Image (tube, rainbow, N blue to C red; front, top):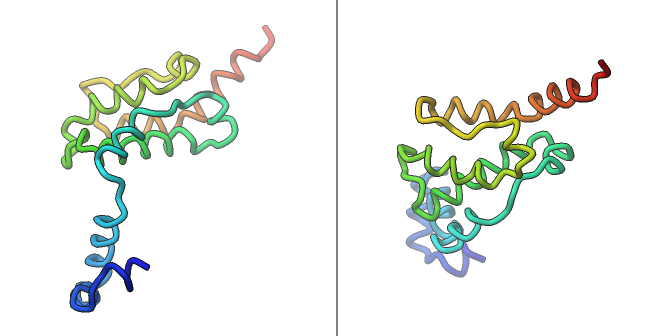
Amino acid sequence: MWWTEEVDSSRRMVLRQGGLDSLMSALVARFAPDAGTSNDRCNKGRLNLHHIYEDEAAAIRFVQQKLRYAHGAGILLPDNSNWLGVMQNIWGRFDVEIMRFIRGPLPVETLANYMFMIVIIPVIFAIKSSRIRRPN
């Protein structure tokens, strides 16, 4: 629909000549949620242990989604220079059971370092839970 109904023939020609990058940029510009919707989605939802036990990728997917919404709302700057405040807000969306095992981000680390910790959340929980269940 978008290609035939919303894009006129001269724009289609420009997009074809621009290649895949040009087309992808146009698609993102057209279908990305507006700032208000992104802001609402950024501030809704929680991550709990049940999500992680059902899907090992739930934590990283949750964080990446919140970062995308924060970027779309203009909260996260294009260069990610204010990532710490945004990530602290996202960490605040974790349930208390997760916060006990995963600390919030620190000013001395990078976004990449903190994201690595998010990726290994299932491993951390597996280790911690095996220690808790292990008989003395």
